[in-house]
Each structure stands twice: as C-alpha cells, then as structure tokens.
Image 1 (spheres, rainbow, N blue to C red):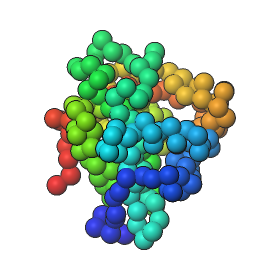
Image 2 (cartoon, rainbow, N blue to C red):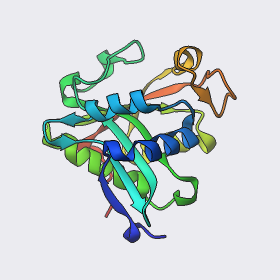
Image 3 (cartoon, helix red, strand yellow):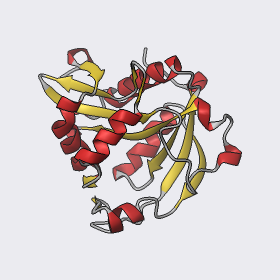
Image 4 (cartoon, helix red, strand yellow):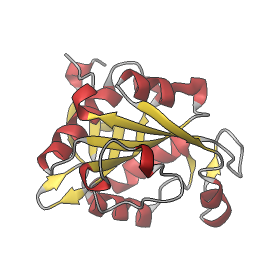
Length: 196
C-alpha cells in the first residue's frame, strides 16, 4: 500500500460501523459508539462544509480524523483559554485521529489532518485545539501532533477518567479505568507543516 493508493473523503453515516471499529481498536473499547459518532459527525458539519474525513485503501478504512466546528465543542476545565492565541470562535477541535496499525508511517494521519484544516479554513478557523493522548503507545500521538506544528499549552491528568467511569470507556493503556494525561495542544494553521 502507498499513499497514492488512498482515497480520502468525508465520513458519512454509512461509514459508522467501520469508523467506530477502527477508533475503538486504536483507543480502547467504547471510545466511540453509534450515538457519540453521530454527535461528532453533526458537530463536524457547518452548512455544506464537512470537517470529518477518512482514508480508504482497497475498500477498507485505514484512517479517520474527527474534527468539530467552533461552537460545537465544549470549552471545559481542560481548556486553558487564557493561553490561547485566538478566541474559541476561530478554533476547531481535533477530537480524534486513528490509523490502522498496518498503515502507520505512511503519512495518512497528516493527510487527513490537511483535509480537515482545509475544510476548517472555509468556515473561518485559524487554528485547532486537541487534547493529545500523552500515554499513547510510544508517545506517538504527541510526536505526530508536534511534528505537524502543534504547541503544548498545558497538561491535564485524568482527562478520560469520567469517560471510563461513566461511559464504559476501557483504556488500552490503563487496562480499564483511565488515568491517562492529556496534552492540551494548539495547532496554528499558519504553522502547519503540510505534506508536499
């Protein structure tokens, strides 16, 4: 498989089962479910602009990027607003990225991020916020987002604890109740290192 064999397109409701399966394999059981994905797809749509993308190879989904439009995500206690360079109305939220283990290292994550950024720019966004999984295997999530231009703003312990206690999320790193730390990171679209 090469990046030239990939098709990148917006996620639709018809993709739900495969998107949920991939996200849960990468992040842990019950990370996504039908209801949460439906909410994310709605939150990642602004008029005719869609911010959620997938990558396919030979008819199989090998990567996803879920992004929420401004006003469709919560500014909560894991958001250090006073350190943000822009108001929330100019910031999309990068909720989730997942790439199939056999397809990693091919630039799929970056390609999906580029599509989401291009769409977010159409609705006036200038940056994206993410809570990066700091305990991801080999710290790959932080390394990837940093290489793309993301800057660490703050660290938040137990970011997904409530999801594991209340929503049945089963963290693959913590083997159950999640105590993973989130790195609050901002990616300015002006500094995004886009693929050649």
